[in-house]
Image 1 (cartoon, rainbow, N blue to C red):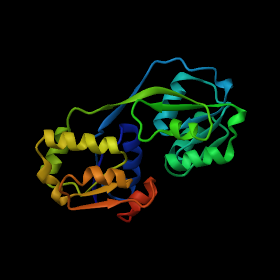
Image 2 (image 1 turned 60 degrees about the vertical axis):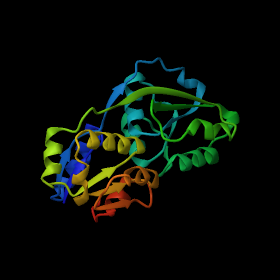
Image 3 (image 1 turned 90 degrees about the vertical axis):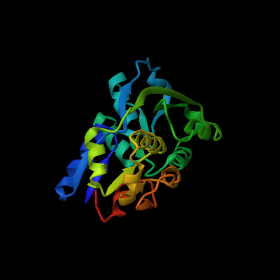
Image 4 (image 1 turned 45 degrees about the vertical axis):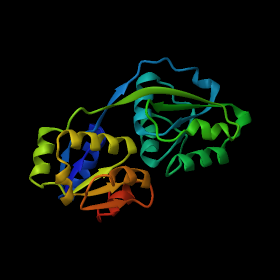
Length: 236
């Protein structure tokens, strides 16, 4: 199998190592790059928990603070693992999406015990703060990083598309899907996708991707990387 990986470089490299160990060929061309935002965080002792909806949020937090005493809630296992590696000892993963994260927080925490600190990027899908506010939680949201969209597809990617050297492209977010569509049209290479299958982490991503003509569009039943790659019989 030949895959084009479009996640930020660190994430794509981790996936590529696992795929290459299984003799799958990988080309990396990130659609977005990580950029921290210089911002002063509040007193962390004022919060009963810190919320992360991505591993990049944990990464940005590591660069902003050395405190690791708070309870942490993450949207999924990858961000939970990142938080543990960063030094947090009390980490709870919602194993899913924003709705599951909100439900987990509502089940395990009491609004009367203090506010929540939500660490996120400038672009988010869904509104965790608004959802938790409806459950009477006070949530302070701090946007401490930004994912900068790529301006073009690399020459290597364009060449591989023209030569039909790519079989699959996984998509992890609605925003990355929109960026890909913009860049593939900019390169005038829409016609090359008819031999490629798109792997979508959610139905919302599929809705964006289906505006282009693909060989096939496959959507994960649950929003996690393991299930996404099981669509093509790959275990990560």
